[in-house]
Length: 258
Image 1 (cartoon, rainbow, N blue to C red):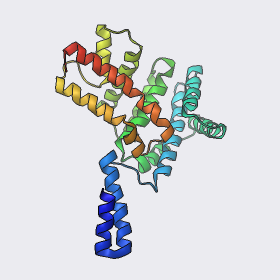
Image 2: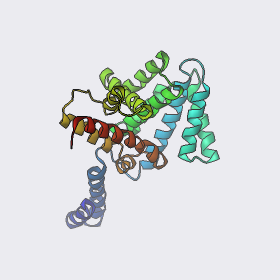
Image 3: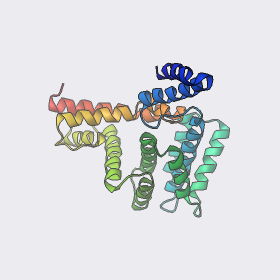
Image 4: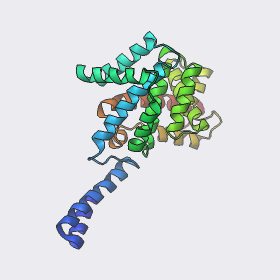
């Protein structure tokens, strides 16, 4: 809608070149309305996606080596991750090289995070999804040890999270992980459901609904793609909506919400 309006107004006031500028400006407004702040300019989208992937695999390598060695579970997690992405043999080799680069003792991953922030940092969803992928990576061997948690805290701080913001996100991902593994209809499962939504059990019904809607919006495929998430990672990102939906349904049922 704004594209056409921008084109017409630009042409009316500035002629042909004004029409081009108006069309581009209108397109930016259309993307903002559809995807929110940080919507990708088509001219920079490919670069943003490349930086996201590079940063993710480099930080995965650093995280896997945080305790001094890379476990079999961590290797399996990365291999499964690449398989789910449908990577070609060439792209797999590139991803492995990035992982090894990050795992190298003398490699400064914070410099790569600074590059990520320069390219993707103004998009809150991409910052959050990067941190979520890293938390899930740390959980691949069943727990997050002290060295991994300290490294995650450093990553989170570089991504603009304060201590409380990081703790809330960490608790939410742990809750979603526990909730997906728990037996239904138990008190601990209900506690995990609240953690999965990132809220306390004493929250009001309105706060529960607001948390649910916010998470579903953050994981929405159109929004993530519009803000620069690599297309082949969308399905993996939005799969978390299943756990969010299950958690919300359990809370609703326990409260008798409509």
